Length: 374
Image (cartoon, rainbow, N blue to C red; front, side):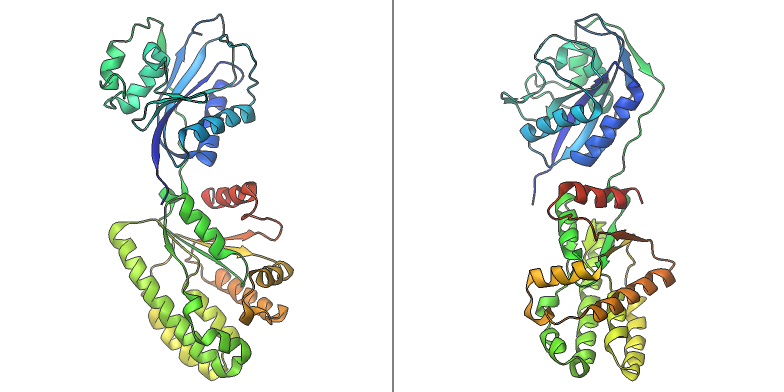
């Protein structure tokens, strides 16, 4: 499991649309650094150390999995995205955005890339005032005093004015949703995406145990004979797994990501079972379905048939290699009908036919933003 860190980052700007610069920085931090837990008020100050326009300043509290050096490099890259052009001149100057790590857990770090606690934080009201607003009881790692005490000892006499405009805190996926189910056709990449999301947001994983099903290889060789025992065994296993894991979720309110939803059983049963078998299967399914917790968000990954077949071939499961495009189309039609008719389910369809979210970070962030902003 990755280690989560708490860091405080200062934001400052004195060029262009200053409020917009701060909000853009916060949105980018939420996308590329971690969850924004708190945002201070905005404070207006005169330029310090040079003759320039007034600054707007704020502090954000962030939870991140990035180590401090990587975090600093990421913040420098975000400054570039917003439009800052750094020069070799080390003197203070006007800037469209300035992002600095002020504190990182309770660590003391001196390196070429980053120094924490920030070496000049205790001398600057535009840092200390917004920092104390959201972390007044935090113990300074070197001074061994609470920050509100450190502020009282600050010798900076410059004027600082609180602005009556609030910045918007982005809501993370793990805060917005308790349970996300990711679905898709065979080979769509649902397990890969579920794993990536669960790793990034430290979510509990619920992955389908298809590899343990002894009927699956037999089904692909003789569908008519093994369809009913296959679908019944899948239904029983999915019901037990989701019941156990979601019962724990209801108790502890964990963030859960699954790579399937139990309605998948009915979709595949519609395709594989004979009419009489399906009628019996549906009775059993209806009884189980009403007992299962619905996801807060149901994500369906659409892939075209060519990409699906390419993915199936690439992952190399012997029993899948004879799957035909017609079978994949039937599965997709079943999912489409389910999404249209199951109106109580909060569903989003994401077309991933032309994206590579596993190999391309931008494509992955595209999907995350689609989910976050849905």
